[in-house]
Length: 376
Picture 1 (spheres, rainbow, N blue to C red):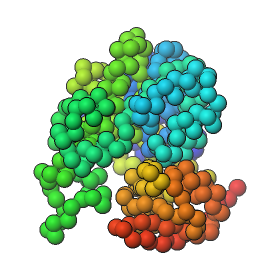
Picture 2: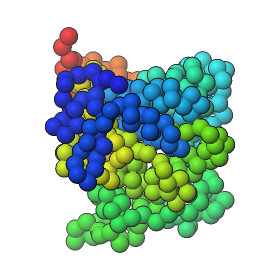
Picture 3: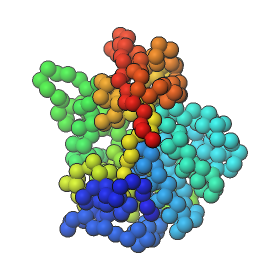
Picture 4: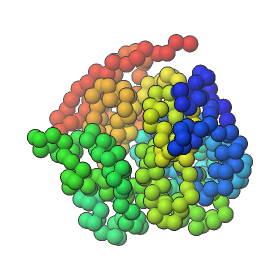
């Protein structure tokens, strides 16, 4: 498997190379040898940064290589909630055209990232008639657990998800770093609440619910097709260190899952520890060809809310926060994530983008300074 771009992704992971983190240090492995071994695993988890085209190209190339070795594999999708499984089935069967498929999913509402990043993978699954499996639950359930706690949600309202295995100490530390950047973190006037704060514990439970839901959907797909591997596309944070979905899979008896992460040249080689991943792959991320804010959007009853802000993104540099509502682009009201994506994509490069936010009950107008269009 090759990768476009410069010859080196980082000092420890060359571009286009597979590297296994070991106790003795990073070890480069032959692609064919590694892929042969991975194809015999019951579950293979492919990480991603959701807005990275390079990551999705790597996922597709890996899927193609694994499918050559295991023709009947299934593909699991973090992006899609379980209620939309019939739509995935119709797509794979060839019963839906592309636009009708995306409309039936309401892609901007369920995911918020550019569908063009995922369409090559979705087309590959349709063309090869590979089963697609919806792994996620509704975001409203995750938010409810975050607000009330897992035990407060009746069993009948958990979308069939069982009680997750407890989080490891290392995972709690990892999640605490994420939690402290959210606007719902309570302020005590004495610094950031600690690891035992009730609000943080509910946040951990919401993340465990998310991990468990995906792990259970993967395990169910294995039961349905016991001889075929499941290859799932899941965000890096749910995989790194084996604390998230791999941990829940182990609790469900799937101890042999492999998880693979894309590695960029901006990453610190000190993070390449044995527990990080089964293997990493050196990718090179080119400068973006078009404008992306770097946010994950959700639509709720005609309101567009920011659910995640990508580190180092235009959104983060411009002061956008998780929990902000986007009410207008360049003075034109918006009521769905799709409208935001389309208007931002159509905005002229280099011209300030007018953004109106709703924050803490007040409207906040912003002018985002945009980069000039890239040269030829």
